[in-house]
Image 1 (tube, helix red, strand yellow):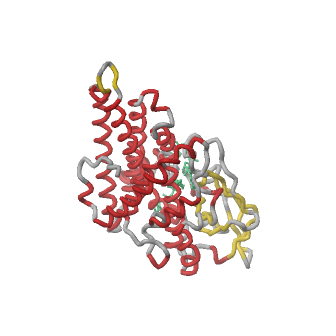
Image 2 (cartoon, helix red, strand yellow):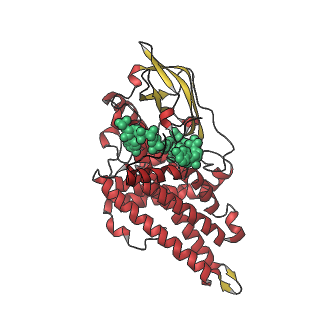
Length: 390
Ligand code: TGC
Ligand code: FAD
């Protein structure tokens, strides 16, 4: 089986259960994702729904959700390891699992009532249902607090109007966790199901990134949402932001998988490829690239491992998570760019995974908070002064 770089022997820090789940996801990615992913990406076609069901069987959807709600009840280290393996295949696979786990199952589990948990979580854990998370709007991305999507209390139901944009799995979703303001301007979470009148999910085409992922809009035109679909246990922007903490944590781990795959591909290539009568790997400039890539991958591995320990102890702060998401995604993008160069012209083809990872990572560095927003979160944590707005 594929052995990723582990220069500082971080494997020794994992339990047998961690290794078992990590290895089973690794094997699934190798057998079922890697052989087909390039074609889906080239054709700009979302991955088959069957893959969601397979991920459900693996325990990759809502890994931290307790067994009584259909999840495998694993810890956060296991969640991170799963994300690394999935993103080694493609960011689109990891994205689907991230959204389902952290942005849909997490809020239903954390902010929902028992009826909502029992109704939705088992179907989401098995991959029978697909979830989406609607926070971003056409005019409100980094600043979700200014959202325009609103609902009014009409006695028997809530009347929802507005729209969300850039939503992963919108065109495929059975249920969407939608963040909207009530009549008092308070952000609340609503569970909007496919089939509700006035709810549509047009797809966004012509992406050069995450081409194997379905991205789209959530449009609400006088949608009557049953009152029992309001998430009762959270009010305010902290609701969606708490979900983002969980998803950003997973992305910090996930980006590592993309970086490892690019590094590994470049290493194999330069050991075989000869120019000037010698392996390309024998040139100092190429060795510098490999040495620097491995150094950065190793640092990123240690960062998420420590973050995983803190998360398991309930001590990982949002700012620590921001730092890891920002660092690891930028690291992965740099590794992808360097690796691509090492393959010369072959690096731009779909015969190798590097260009696909590189293009995917342009989304990953933007979603779940842009690179600059995470820097400002760190700046705010250091100084105690927010630099976002007046
Ligand atoms: P601010 O006034 O700072 O905070 C409002 C309230 O929220 C609390 N809070 C948090 N709570 C939990 N976790 C966090 N990370 C939190 N950050 C803030 C805060 O204490 C406050 O609580 P309270 O009780 O006082 O009301 O909010 P702000 O309006 O100044 O905005 C802050 C900012 C810019 C950091 C935040 O809004 C932000 O993170 N913006 C980036 C938006 C973003 O990340 N969007 C992601 C959309 S989802 C997505 O991209 C999915 S991609 C999926 C995939 O395919 O993988
Ligand atoms: P803007 O907020 O308009 O930012 C534009 C630029 O301005 C950025 O460089 C930003 O860093 C910078 N900027 C903004 N504010 C400041 C500031 N105060 N100081 C300095 N610089 C600033 N959203 C969801 O809700 N659910 C999803 O499932 C989802 N999936 C996505 C999938 C894909 C493929 C993509 C690309 C996006 C997805 N998003 C999703 C949306 C994503 O979260 C937003 O794109 C992101 O938060 C940035 O918002 P924006 O694109 O509107 O950029």
